[in-house]
Amino acid sequence: MRKIYIWSGIFIVLILLVVGCSNEEDGNPAGPTLAVHITEPADGDTVSFPQTVTAEVTGDEIAEVVFIAGEDTFATLAEPPYSAVWSFYPDSGEVTLKVCAADSAGQTACDSITIYVPPQEFDFLLSQIAVSSHNVYLGWTKFSGMLFQEYRVYMSTGTEVDSTDQLVALIEGAVNDTNAFIDNLSPTSDYMFVVYAYTITGSCYVSNQLVVRTESVPPPHDDGAVLIPIEGDTFTMGYSWSSGGGGSEEYPAHPVRIDGFSIYKYEVTCAQYKEFMDAGGYSDPEWWDSAGWMWKEKNGITAPLNWNNPEYNIGEDFPDYPVGGVSWYEAMAYARFVGKTLPTEAQWEYAARGTLGTDENGDGYPEGYRFPWGDEFYMGGEVHCNYLAPAGTAYDDGFEFSSPVGTFENGASIFGVMDMSGNVAEWCLDWFDNTYYWDNVFDNPTGPDTGTEKTIRGGHYLWRGYEDDGFYFRTTTRTGKEPETRRTFIGFRLVENY
Image (cartoon, rainbow, N blue to C red; front, side):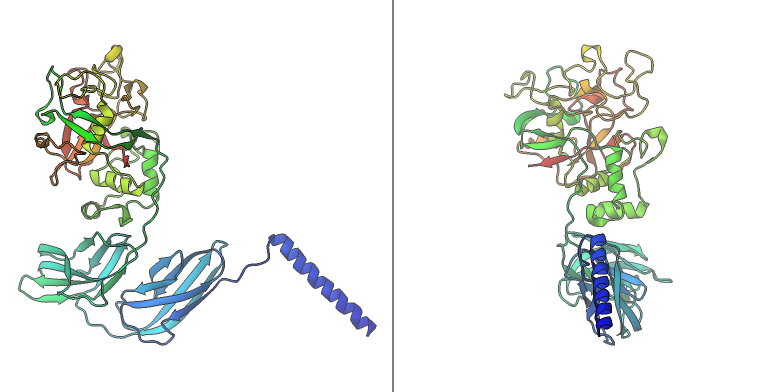
């Protein structure tokens, strides 16, 4: 008995030492083991679509939960509840349904069941290609040997959808395989879609019914931009100086009242734009509208024009240079990514010309400056911006193409905004109309309701200034280009409205 008692005591001491050492190494008692259990559907169930799949996940700091049917992942969730909609499966028969979880410590756990998918009646397969908080990109398979007159996409917020529901896309013409981008949806909501395809001979084919769950709204990205606050005021917009010399699209000069806003001190740089690219900006529909996304997909756009081409100062090797080679669509996608927007023409011109100077046209408001820095292009005999000039002359700006943002400190506007003339021209929010000023919109004008071109302001490094006293670099100079236009000398800056 004595010997047994001694060995028992030693055994207990050893257990305590092991536990004590374990706790000392870990720093904290071990947390709960990561575990996954599928609660819906049950193993062996016959399912119908849309099918809700729910799992119980236990553990600490769950990083993500992935839902897999066969070989296809149909949902990835980062927070509870861990319930996903399985919208469709093209085949019938037994299918392995799996849910796997991973935590921040690198542990993984899975649960799987076998369910039965019955034969389904549909003529062609409709699928979800990409989804965001407010839109979905749909695609369907190609028919062979038939020509189609139109596709109609219907949407419902119920559990069924057919041709009596809301028509959300109509694609006409001699089309074969195609896609549809449906925008203006609500976050974290379920929608049902179906496509009806009509051949030129009048036959109708119907896709499967597809359920789509939109995502939650992501927080805006912080690009570290310096913003300059500008108080609201009334100023003269358009060419108003008595000396004349403006283009016809700059007339008539008219007073405009504008609310306060903040504007980027510098043009958006290549380094900032690369953050958008690295975050999947070109593959995430969250940042795009319908026209921009479809343009991007059709043309295979994955980066700015001439990105990483050293001849144009655009790319990873030019982090402090303004990004160029972007369309209006790309500029707006970046703006949504950071929770800002492009400036209206009125905001841009006010930040560039200000309200100093004399009241030459007698409208009760000072004219502001012809150029951001003053009324003369070579004021004080100095070069104030990046532009095209003969090398080695008094007019030489020192750069063949664009320059790092903020290089010409003497070119700042009265508000301290840099590079508003020269370097790269800048997209604005408005549609362009060379007669719009005749509407005399006084209160926060945003341009015409529709158009074919978007407004561009500010001049650029390929325009001459020495031959015409900086005509194209004036604060009132305005022009327009189609929103899909991409030029290495066109970039952008953003504003934040109050």
